[in-house]
Structure formats: structure tokens, C-alpha cells
Length: 254
Image 1: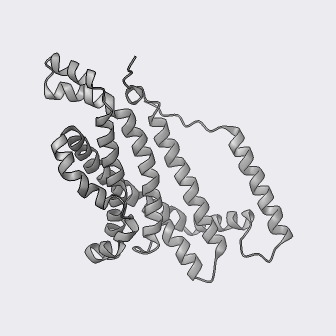
Image 2: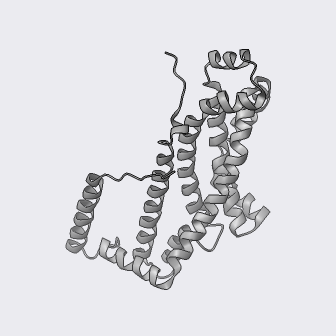
Image 3: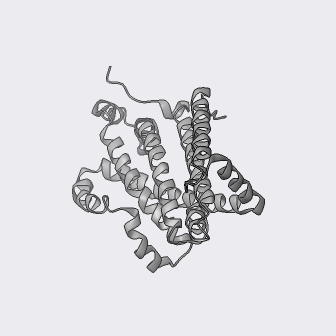
């Protein structure tokens, strides 16, 4: 199975026009703090030459992968179970609604207290940022299964495994993929913020370190550009999953 990423030429052309306008504005006002695209490009080249670019990208993706995977492996099954069991939802929903609005960044002091300054603290923060959105997405997906098809599955006497694989999974898969796409964006946001405080590597740390080490704003903007580019690639990768046939199936009321 091959996943194709479709990139339209018009957005790239528009980005090119913006870069040209940006460089022209910098040339006309060279005294401004914001560096131009050529300076940013040279800063990215310096990072590649020193080996820091690959190191920081790998560090950030490592933390996002583990935090997102833990959030999905716990949040989705638990959300499906709670959404399926009305009594469990009535008992646990108030607790979920209390913790859900708390920003993952508010957990930074707790994460540092529990795990110290390092990868585990950042992974924990990403896990917190992913767990509740995926939990609620799974609960909502179960609620949206038409009762007609649940009754049909029961009337056919499907075993629990067959019921999950033939009824529950096809119904919730499309909504879960959309929720995972949105949550992955949240994870990428959280890792950058966490790396500014809780670790000493990664793209978020790059921005803070460049700011503190002699106001290297070319590196600051370079880090921002790299973060945005990787975020775009992650989103395109998740969007490609929506075109997988087994994930596109959904029920119709017609």
C-alpha cells in the first residue's frame, strides 16, 4: 500500500511570492530585527553543516512519536469502552471534563517534578495533550454509530470479536482518523513548547537557545520555518490516511 502526498502548485507559487515580498521589504528596511529569507536560508545551512538540524529534528519527532502513541494506545480504547458503557460514561465524564480543559503546559512543573528535565517530561506533556482529545473523539465516534446497525449486528448473533471487527471498527474508523490528525497537530505544538522549558534539545530548545546566545534571530526564524514545514508534512501524512479504503467507509442513513 502506497500513500501519495498531493501538493498543489498554486500554494507553492503563493509562498514563493510571499518570500520575494519578504526579502524586498528587508532590503528596503535593513535595520529591522526580523531577518530576511536569505539569512534564514543561510542559518538552516549552518544548522545542517553542524549536524544540529538532524539531531534536533530527530529529538522532537522521537518525543512526539512516543507521546502520541501512548496517548492513542490508552485514549482510544478507553474512549471506546466508556462511550459504549453508558454507566461508565455517567460516572467518569465529570472527571474527564475537569481535567480536559487544563492546558498541557500547566503540567510542566509536575512533569519536571516527576521525571526531571529530559525526554520523559516532554513525552508526558505530549501524552497529556493527546490523551483527552483522542478519548473524547473515541467516545463521540461510538455515540454516532446508528442504533439500527448495532441492533442488526446483535440480531445476527455476531460474536464479540465479529461485532467489533464488522460493526464497531468500520463505524468509528473515519472519525478516529480525523481526530488523530487534529491531535497530532496538538502534539507538535506541545513538543515545541515543552522543549523550551523541560529539555535541552529539539526544535523548541533551538529557538530559545538561539535567542539567548547573542540574539541569533536568523536561527530563531529558521527554527520556526522548520517547525512549520515538519508540521505540514505530518498533516499531509495523516490526511493521506483518510484516502485509505478501509478508513473511508462510513454508515449512511439512506
